[in-house]
Length: 513
Image (cartoon, one colour):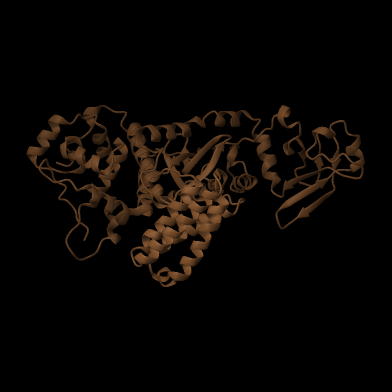
């Protein structure tokens, strides 16, 4: 049953708090601006109607918030709240009230709110910002940053062995003999391979592991139908074997402890592992309006439309302009912004003439009606083929003219032999690309581009002050909670900084009293 504290601090405690807590303390400012009682409504359905009363939901949420405001763990926030009078006052507790323990905080985070509940809290905080006229509708900025998973990353060979041992551990809970026998046989086969060669390829590990996986599937079929923990361990093991058996697989598990984390290259030689925090920020206030969390190998461009749609659906906000870096410049994103009357402040990639020595497609002038193309050599063609299935248009140039062209060695595709032709392929929504190509040369675009540092400042603040860089919890559901709480803490502090540019004496420390 959901419990509530009285919310009253007695006169004696109020006098102590009044003397000891500065009026310009961050928690005093937060308390003067935000009423967190909405947490009761968000968590009510996750409590039973019978039984003894639980710990106060608002107190438990505030403990989670304090963790991200001050970069504390569950255990640390309990210790700090035990002795810090500002923490106690913010929680609405008297000096002799007990603090919920760390396991209660963890249980509340997972079972009372969860990732969806924290997202609802995030939206409620943003609504309060909107109510106070902090959020504009002129220009929003979209970007992402990496969030490391809270695990170590073993080699592929060790990863396969670790995943297999997790399967054996679960088997040992219901058939100890089967577990011991198969673990011994598996390790003996691996040892035998090392006796034959100094280095055993990953493919051989996968071959051996797959054979054992198939055997165990048949021997433990009944458990697979009902034992959820065993199914989870077996599924991760099987996926690892399948993924690393296929050299072309790009979506690979990198840790059996956190099987949702992924590896990708942010730039050449710069590998990142874990998750991403994709956010959309109001340029005027720097308030984060929405976010999504994905494994790190999800391309940034895929999240832009969802972020804009979510902000409109949840908050009723639609910007006049969107700013983002070149990674978001997919044609379907540009087409979406054009169709929704949103100005696109997204630049184009440019190739180095020294490195590539070829013209980019954007160097070809496409007509507004998409029925002709003029190459950098001044030749125009109206010959094209429309591929409706994948929404492409292929323009063909005359082969004889192309062979005589002095720029042929710089053309998009080199087919110098007689009888061949040069071709340029564009999207059927190239009209959106043409619009943006005109826009990027304007002063308005340059001004918007120069403001994109704002979103980087939000990320820097969350990394430095709110522990964003490394997830404290495992799997994507845990990363969602961690990232959302960092976003919430950032918004709360930003909201306070905007609204509290007033004299500290006007803040009411004794509001609860």
